Length: 82
Image 1 (tube, rainbow, N blue to C red):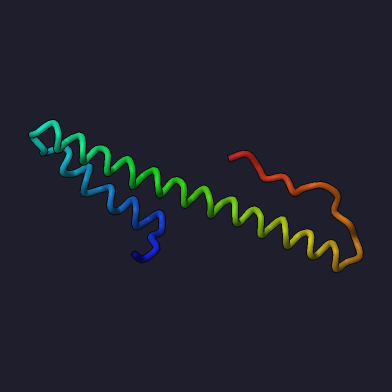
Image 2 (cartoon, rainbow, N blue to C red; image 1 turned 180 degrees about the horizontal axis):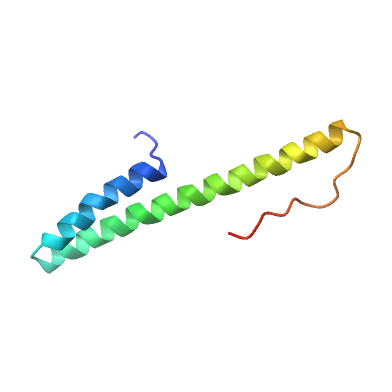
């Protein structure tokens, strides 16, 4: 299975929501709602990991630059609140 990005996952949730508006049977509506929520949850998780990874790279780069300049960074880089 190929890797999906958040945009693709959200695009897959959209048809579920569209069908949800016209579905008549309760079991079908529930399944569509569940799929849409799962796609959105996966997209949120991917975006969260991407943001954390970006913050780590920025922190690591700052530590590398400081080390190269003969400086020492004490403690951890703090990430801004989401």
